[in-house]
View 1: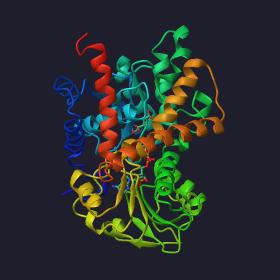
View 2: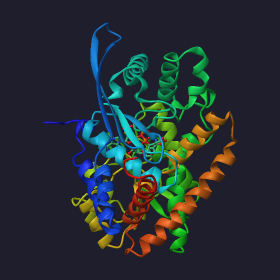
View 3: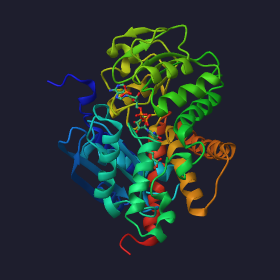
Length: 427
Ligand SMILES: NC(=O)C1=CN([C@@H]2O[C@H](COP(=O)(O)OP(=O)(O)OC[C@H]3O[C@@H](n4cnc5c(N)ncnc54)[C@H](OP(=O)(O)O)[C@@H]3O)[C@@H](O)[C@H]2O)C=CC1
Ligand SMILES: O=C(O)CCC(=O)C(=O)O
């Protein structure tokens, strides 16, 4: 029996993304040959590599990189370090990346990958060696104009710096500097961009704000809950709190907490820094049974952790009027059907969390052009682009009884279809 919540497999993510794709493809009557191409992933890499641990023992790790489609540009997408990473998960996440980059009009395709490990079990120096060996093993399957990884669950700017450094050492000295955009989400001192750290959470916040504006609502005093208080969850909460909204519940991998009077976002963040990055035993909130988390009394629910968290089992009990998907694939097809039938708004992942890959694109452009943009410049670009994409998806969603996901998929798939048809499917 699997007892650790971290070890639980995430069932059905691939089935989920395929059902979302096929539903939209049917509506737009997608060219049948292009449907065949988009239904499979272009490349799937599984690699096993040995690393020496601090105790001198060798451990063999399994890494994945799935490249779904590159019709619109180089493959793009994060690397996840988590026990649930496997080939099916990587395939599903790579597909979502293709739809996301196409939806927001970036010159990228979709990829995803990672390692099947629980990083909390390793020292920092072990994680560095594991990441460097993983990068060597990936070799030229990644590259600045071919496939560009970025952070995802349990990876961060430090991870990207290790990948960059390792990748560069595989190139001749004259080639090294021009390879800096092999990864995005790097630290500022290593070619990272201002704003990439907060971009995904900021994008989640913007989507909620734009949605509220369409409903003539203000965010002040709205109550929200966040599942996952990592990069995406924390920054989304930070910007919502700045707007006067109130955080009333948080869940991470180890537990859930709630406080009807509000949980101070920065105070919780600081508490976590001193308590092994965990929300457990946070003094200004009560512990809550994890299965009751999504039933908390609130207005806005932000799943910002793993996939398939909102399903037929809990969608009927959700009290929020809006689900803003910070995570990739947090709502399965049955769960979403229940939400939409109940009149609950769903801002779909490929729109809601697209601020991250938008900022990654800005970082990639800056590296390519030898530029350095100020934070306000990056944030202003994110604002403008996100509004443009949100409006398009929202308006099209209105024509489909509020189904913004199908609208988003239709826009994304049509863009890719257009590119194939213009070039010829097999040039
Ligand atoms: N980083 C980015 O730029 C982007 C991320 N995303 C998506 O957002 C989601 C979160 O990513 P990110 O914030 O980067 O990852 P982080 O690793 O920074 O944070 C993940 C958070 O999820 C929590 N978590 C993990 N497992 C569970 C669980 N079973 N139940 C509840 N909480 C859990 C973690 O808790 P704990 O710390 O206790 O493990 C942590 O708080 C992912 O789905 C990712 O694909 C999407 C677009 C871009
Ligand atoms: O920033 C990127 O390139 C991709 C981030 C990511 O993995 C995602 O959007 O899910």
